[in-house]
Length: 88
Image 1 (cartoon, helix red, strand yellow):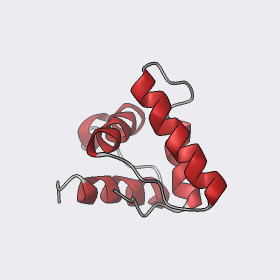
Image 2: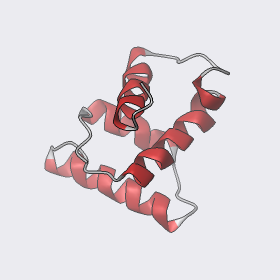
Image 3: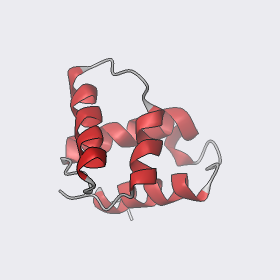
Image 4: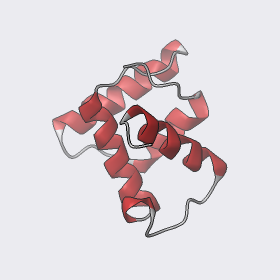
């Protein structure tokens, strides 16, 4: 599914995972990098969206409730993830 992320949001998400541990994580990073280079929103599967949500939890505080979102860009990404995953 096409995720309506801005280049700034894509870079922010990529910053949440500096180095991939699993092949699935590397595929997500590759898709994000390709989207940046092609100036298009990323096309990600539900599994890949869940991987990114996991990165968000690791970096922003568990399950979004344990920590505070530091800036509006992070909040925008979290809302998009929740919407795309049918959580809101």
